[in-house]
Length: 639
Image (tube, rainbow, N blue to C red; front, top):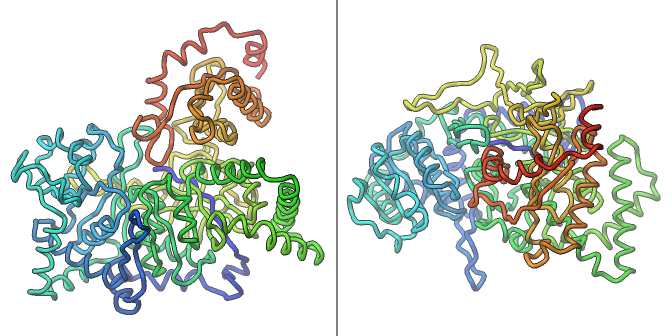
């Protein structure tokens, strides 16, 4: 699972000590504070010291009310479910698979499995039956927890192929429609498992306490399957030490208020959501608000006004496009006021970023423009309290970054992956070079191989990959380096720039090495384009498959001259930023949409390139079958 993130920091540094809101915090001291902790030990602390504080708020019902659990209640329910799982035979080291949306039971399941010393793993809810069969067989999970009927129906065809699986726990009790012993598996309601555990706890609570206290920091905390964009998914096993080191360092070098509010809308199969709202929330004693449908995240922001937000680039692009759309409908005076405030704020950001001090008169003008014009816009979006804004899973365009900087939301890129427990490199306001992903976080080293591949070493690296026999094998070399498969460059000051995936480089028939994500990020910077796939491996030049954004271009307007003109302009804009070999010579607009359900993209919206090239092979061949014009031939010959 590849994560490329944008992160907001308000920070300065002096001699290795981080200054946050004027208070020095030593990174080593912060890390030392969690060195011997585990997620269950921190959850016990939260229940004991912050038991009455809100921990998780579920999805609001039609009347707008939602269930909220305190930290004491989260631990109590986790303990009950944990004992219920043990009663079903879950043993230390066993894997437990979960397939459900962001709901309270998901958190309880994960924490419950941890306390049982098992390894929880969330499977993407969009997996096909074939993919379910792969991860279920590979994990050899004896117990799975499914949300309801839709999940059951996709699991039924592969149950006979899973001899290790004994119990299927279903959250929506009305959907437990399969009889006892069907396919040799026992189907149980979630509440029944919790009830079993409740009885065991009442009878002998010390057994539960003794069990989780045996957990060590280097024991597994969870597992994630990679997206499988370049091969079969791998089971990435992380330790408590991995994820708590990451959480402690990020907390130390970012400005997040005490007891923050957060919106969780990504699946817990995603490293960013696990790190921020499953592990980091325990460390920070956060209040997590659940939003199971990413399409409703804007509404959730308006309700919660979170302290931080992680979003895939399309979330930020849609927010930017939405504001730009409103501006077009605003009266000229309002539009002019916004544009002046935006330009002034962007100029101030760039001056500060260059290490220059703002003139007093300019600083006052920026503050006034923010108070009267920009702050109300951020409040309308629910982003008025955000001090850490993140974006991941794909590159974000410089245009989107600049627009949001001018809105008073300074985004900064960082880079990481599941294998690095999240962010491995970060930018900060005092060390921010737009287009780079910053420098390694404290305690982490980065180097480049001869071919530009990025290698990482440090305490955030995975324990290893799960093997078919249940063992965990480390992919690190003898010196502790992980070959990431990403390609990048390091400048003289140590800033890392990601150029592409090693296995995803386009190599044209003329021998040119071209990073497709660079082309695609420029194309999707235009609001009409939802997805773009650059094509050109072993071909004479680059072409593109383009899918329109249905939220911007209604279906009835997809074939209109206006839409065609907009896409032409988007391609032309992208080509001005690309070398001649990288420029898109031809393109085809596809019907779309591309979603995890249709298969062209992963649940974190990364392109599944093999599926795309196979599915649209005829369309691609047609683009190249057309006779290349003289200009295209000349490009190939002279590049």
